[in-house]
Image (tube, rainbow, N blue to C red; front, side, top):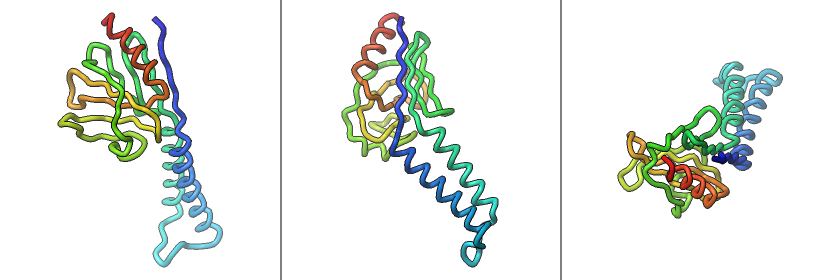
Length: 161
């Protein structure tokens, strides 16, 4: 059976995170070249470490990846992925709620209707909710540009598992 793969580039989150990265690098170079920032300056290494850390965060969260295979569903940003085997999927549906409910883009954790939910969200676009049979996280929500195709592909795999 055919696998499904989708990779969503999050231009707004990447722009925001990259801007913060640039600011930290500028502060680092400013303090080295011009002099201390403020009356009680942070050490040079702090600005450099923060810049490198933000660069790593920017690279990791620039793409949301969705993969549907015979083994199950995998969704996540960079190194933060959730793998869900077909035997643990109870239900799935297209999320009709406002994106504001999740508090922004990225990875979110919260309770909705008494169930713990992990959200892998990009700014804008529809989302799919996957209900799980077991685990303390009982729902996984992810953004997708093709919710109907995701649902059809999941239906095909769920029908044989």
